[in-house]
Length: 161
Image 1 (cartoon, one colour):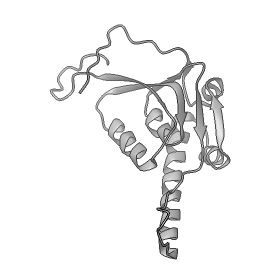
Image 2 (cartoon, helix red, strand yellow):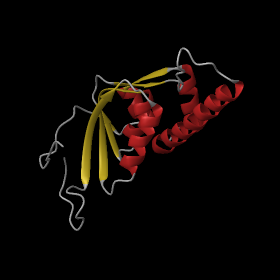
Image 3 (tube, one colour):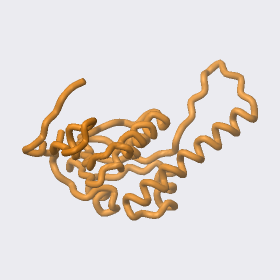
Image 4 (cartoon, helix red, strand yellow):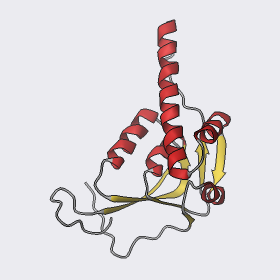
């Protein structure tokens, strides 16, 4: 959805509006979506339509304008690593997983802090404690710019692939 982009043959629009809700999931997939969204030559607005939890916080925070429905929330928690139940683990494998988790935890905390005006230490604390944030508190913290019901821009266009 958005305004038509002039002079860019590969993109039809210059402003994308994403209304999203997710209970989180795979942090690697979330970083892939985050990096793809960051690389788009468009303005991005994101809206929390219900839940922005865990890994999906990263793509949500890409929005240069971020909003949330009044009855929505954000959930920060520690990143997780899943091992197959029959996997025999070596100390190296466990150390590698710990390093991996630390790297992504730091990347996430740094970006959320930079976008919201919070400190990295505060975001890390929220993640490590498991913190649920209402839309009103999210606004006060700078995670979002406005609490509002989502409305489709009048000049919006959409398509399915």
